[in-house]
Length: 118
Image (cartoon, rainbow, N blue to C red):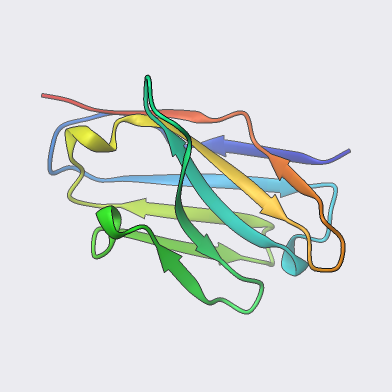
């Protein structure tokens, strides 16, 4: 059974930091591209950061220099270190796993709430 379980969300003041985790099970984690998405109230879900199976990283412009995505294949876990948080970072954060080509398959976690407010 495939599972993606996010944790680490919460309430933080502007300028603060949080580290999100995504624990994976039920599939070959090391072979999958892993992603962090977020969805703010009234907005579409957006891709925040991604890391390939070889460790290449990419970020949406709004988080470059503040967020860092990483993975630990030995622990089947992905992370998102978020620094210098802003109120506009408030959203539900989701992890997503994309299968290696040519198979087209994706798994989603249930999400974790991040609220940046004073």
